[in-house]
Image 1 (cartoon, rainbow, N blue to C red):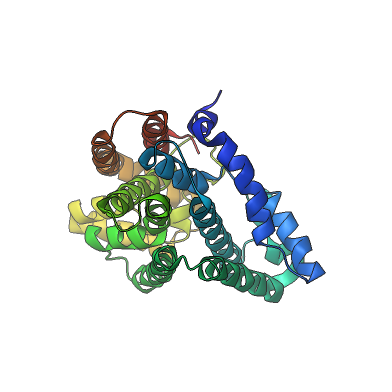
Image 2 (cartoon, rainbow, N blue to C red):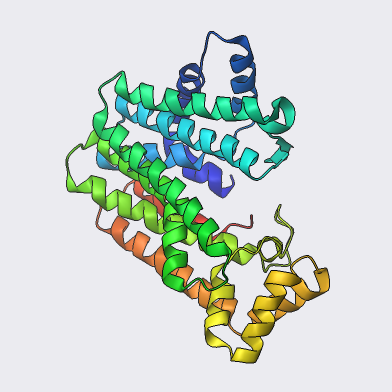
Amino acid sequence: MNVVEQIKEPVNKEMELFEKKFYDSMSSKVALLNRITYYIVNRKGKQMRPMFVFLTAKLLNDGQVNERTYRGASVIELIHTASLVHDDVVDDSNKRRGFFSINALWKNKIAVLVGDYLLSKGMLLSVDHDDFDLLKIISVAIREISEGELLQIEKARRLDITEEVYYEIIRQKTATLIAACCSLGACSVQPGTSHVETFRKFGELCGMAFQIKDDLFDYGEEKIGKPTGIDIKEQKMTLPLIYVLNTCDDKDRKWLINSVKKYNKDKKRVKEVIAFVKANGGLAYAEEKMNGFKEEALELLSAYPESPYRSALELMVNYVVDRKK
């Protein structure tokens, strides 16, 4: 059994029922929409987000979930799917998880409308059942993701991102959605308790570690789905690069900035940048920070009694930083 299957094991039953409920939650009277949503559902990823929702709910509720938990998981997956569909349009991306993206098969206009439809379906799923506490968690997440994306675009034009700004970008862009999963899971079974905030924080810490791990992949030799140096080619400021820019001397800094701004398509120069960042402690520093977030997340979990759900969440935290892709 691989790690993802181990994490999923305590919520297997819920995940099976969730898939059916999730597919039903997308249904429409428009045949074209149903064709597209069928395509989306059959090309799903690891489904880490719903797993976070169910594991958190079961940990806090003696191994039980309720209808609100299923709705919370469906809402987060609808919102997440909508954001991916829109992202592919924004990035002009033709592939998603090895399959054609919606915009590649059905063009941008349809992809944008499908994304809007999924977003509204997510909102209505909460409104129709008076889950306003869940809706608030989701709405905050959507706002933060949009702000994070825009903050990144604003800062990317100038390569002077501080570590603090970088953390704010990844907190909003990546960590917010995982934080929403965990707080939704908690809120579905323990509304109005301190657990909702504890698990929001737990999810945020997981998300921060997850994104730094993604940054580190850019400097790896292994084949992991995205080619090495892609962040540099796209002029994305990642933690290893930020650290080295802030600690090297003026001459090296000028060379680095010049490389990323003007020579980011030059394969040889990109390799030199990667080697320089490695040699000057950029990777070691990022790994140290990533492990700091991981330890904080595990510490929050340690306050709860041992259970298969706590063990699965601990496994999830470790998987986030140990994964190979």
